[in-house]
Length: 469
Ligand SMILES: *Cc1c(COP(=O)(O)O)cnc(C)c1O
Image 1 (tube, rainbow, N blue to C red):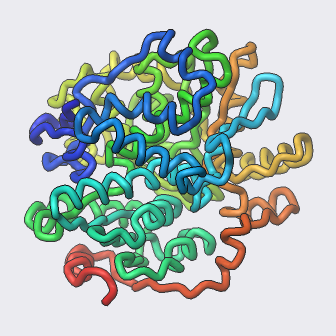
Image 2 (image 1 turned 120 degrees about the horizontal axis):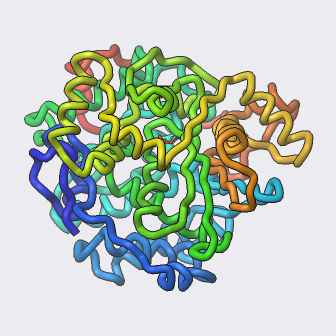
Image 3 (image 1 turned 180 degrees about the vertical axis):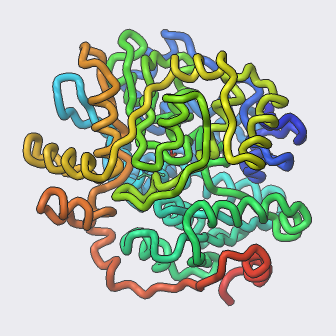
């Protein structure tokens, strides 16, 4: 399997190459040259398989011959099977919970850091380990987090021999639980950096480091944010396990996906292209509504970033949307380059009408404000006794608004454990969700981090210094 850049100017790479590279050198994102697909019979044959087994089916074609079957199987078992050391604390790994006649939650928060990002990052750490050892190289991971990516990436990479990780977060803008999940990992290869700015500033600093090719080569820079293809790939799996459990390929399913960087929902789109009968994909956003506005107006335009109850979605530029555009524009890199240049120079671009129509055919979108998010949490608690986190509540509301209650299952991705956003949950429901046992002492653990200004040179200087001595 080869991977090509959405901007058409970077060399094509194999799976090992894209995993270690992250962002393409032409500023684009890597996508598979061809999306593999399954027949209905092949999908039917996934019934009754374990999560790790379905992961093997779904992921194998993307990996190609970069890993042997045995190597990939062992990594997937070690990640997703408790019997082999997997860290997901639920036998189904990604359990479905029914909340109404046709309504389901897909709980993606049973991993070590209590958000769906563990699904990809627990696996990515193993890929890094394997490929760097094989090459005899070292990697520097640089990422920006609005909260959940950072802790999941740190958990996936902590203590790994050839990897050091520098994680930026916007100072004072992540929850205490989120910050402590990162800063309480006292490991010499883990450096947490609080940036004086918002999440988009952090992301811009990371991009600037990646676009500085000499710096990038000097330190062996690699990305763990959702521009890394391997992350999107790992997230395709739970669309398969959940849809098959609900009757696919013989019954269509729709998904509502709380969306920030468009990574998780793009994985759903890829699952659909692979043959899974997905009827609609709902883009659920909070007040940071660039994607909802794009679906309404056909214009993608940067807006102000608002702080909301669902901070992991407080993002105005959705990086992975570029992958989506590439596909609906017939994989024409010239079109993407034009759109992205307009975005950089004028702050937005207008979709060609055919692209806009294609987008509206695949997706629906709903913007959910904090007030509604609170009332959804309150109502779910009162009527179903279910305590949802605010990101999940945004998804539930969007499913209700955008999807007909017509017998086809409506699945909302439940992206975080309520205790991760305990303050917002308590305010809405009166219930203070408790952290799982393995994290009960989180608030008492020692923290380690440094503060930096929103400045590329300062950041590069710190990264050159390496991990803690
Ligand atoms: C990251 C995150 C999201 C958004 O996912 P994207 O892939 O960036 O769209 C939603 N909810 C939670 C809890 C998250 O951590």
